Image 1: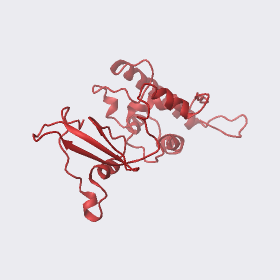
Image 2: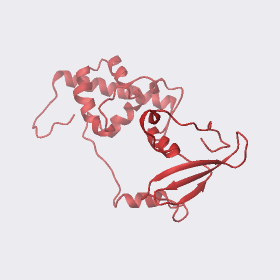
Image 3: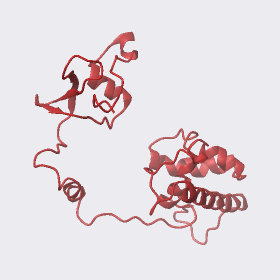
Image 4: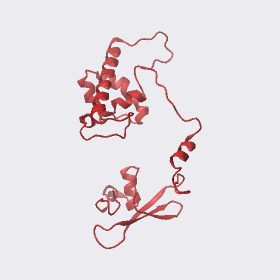
Length: 212
């Protein structure tokens, strides 16, 4: 736990006990994750349907390890508000405890490694194998249309992407890395009033039509 501008500071007994319990809980989560979803390094993107920690809220697990509500409200939430950009964290799954303790440890001073140049260097390396001009970061998607190639229900689609510069390109698949509200607007346009709360009708996703 951080104690800025405090010399010879030590945690109060309640906090010291909760920090020990927190570390014990994180070690438990790490062991469970290592058995049920092993990986070479911690990651938010590894997943196992057999890991019950995906379904148990982290706050519930804290209570099972006798970590106080005081610790949750005055240590965990304030520190990790900057991690999640969110203050309502009661539903954070317990499986994430291992990674959170790695990113912002409570028991040690955290250290962060980053690239030596800037983000452009990282993006260039990530997109090095893409055709020139295929990666665009300076324009937004205005609309996506799914046009059936022929008239059957499971027909594949030509997916036409309209950007804000007026360009239209055709793809065989699309991934929406955005909020559901933004996706609905891209697919069905801007709605107003009660219609804005009614999702539009879209085809059932499958591999043939590209809606997966």
